[in-house]
Image (tube, rainbow, N blue to C red; front, side, top):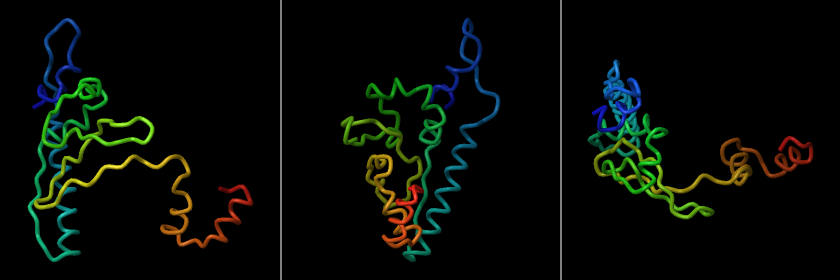
Amino acid sequence: MQALVGAMSVTGFPDAPPVKCGPTFIDMLGGTHLLAGILMALRTRDATGRGTRVEVAMLDAAVAAMLSYLAPYYEFGAEISRSAIREATHPDRGPVKVLGNPIHLDGEPQPDLAPAPGLGADTDAVFRELLGMDPEEVARLREAGVV
């Protein structure tokens, strides 16, 4: 698995063959993502009353750890697994490849992808919806130069 995701390509010495990483970090990543998936499934069950199966591919979980090393490879169209790399449309850059979610709940589609909002684009919504502030309070903060 370490060779498959490229981890061995960044370990060892330049004039020698690739070296297997000491700790089994991919196993740990798989377990950590599985824990997150189980917690997601329990929350879903609490909300809907419906149980679900959780799947985590170790390969998908390992891709995130190696992405900074392997980004140029993925950028040129390599598909590694069922969801490791997805495509999103950015308003300024057009189609871009992004990291998918390695956790899969049975019967649940992968969420739609959307680019992050521009700087400050969602400030009013955060103040209203998350902090419960009314528009007058936000206006006072703007006038005081806080926002």
